[in-house]
Image (cartoon, rainbow, N blue to C red):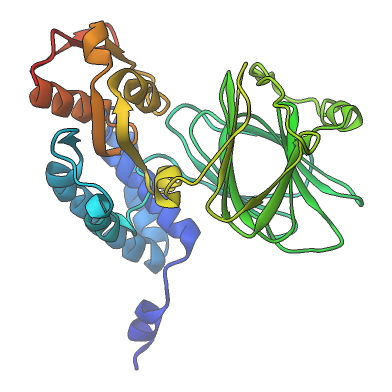
Length: 347
């Protein structure tokens, strides 16, 4: 085998694929110019892995573009149950997130955040991998007693490195999630907190006041902190032990809710997707708005109650609006940077 063949047989490093995805986003963006083109050429020639990564990324981009024309949206009256998602997931399982991705090592306490439309992958000092979704902020604070991470806003997936004598604890609002070696997602919105267990086992419980003070000692760039969901009362003093596949949700003014959604839907953002299943259009628009500075606005109250089913690309609000408008006879227009869906629905 020649040196070139041997080199091509090796897998492309994840961080190089991440860099390639960034260049694809830049090359297809509105701000593309001579500086971006020159920078891309320098990066492409810097290492043989870069060209291989860009070729793979381009194939995924083109496949995703083709698939979007056929599987991104179906009206609620046409959606099949159970197996409706499988073809899309099988085809898009390897698709990269079409927003900025970074791979970074962190070995100190501090605030780590993403902007709207950005995602980031972190490897913490113990080997734990953290995936941050759009508009997310966390604080990392490890000491000899525990590995602690605070989710101040947004959504994060934690693949925890197992160390039985060094517990891993995520706090969000007035709740904490305690795990050893496991994988789980925590999402913190203004009036809602949700913990989804992908695999393993975790315990969710109220945060002791001393721990709240500990995490507040971290000083960094200002970070907006959401309202804490109301504490849920239960017979176990607010403690819950979760099993794989379960989601525990705390909403302001409501008791805690335990359900078992399809994990591939709750983690779809890791693949750059938004999956909607009988979701009211107004709620669906709010979900799409998480990934884009340009906001979707649904003007008609009746239209806002339409049930939407489908698979969409995170950040592609224009395609989402056009698909919904075509299915229900609505009108799409621009109002400043916003995308407005107006008119009475035709069903």
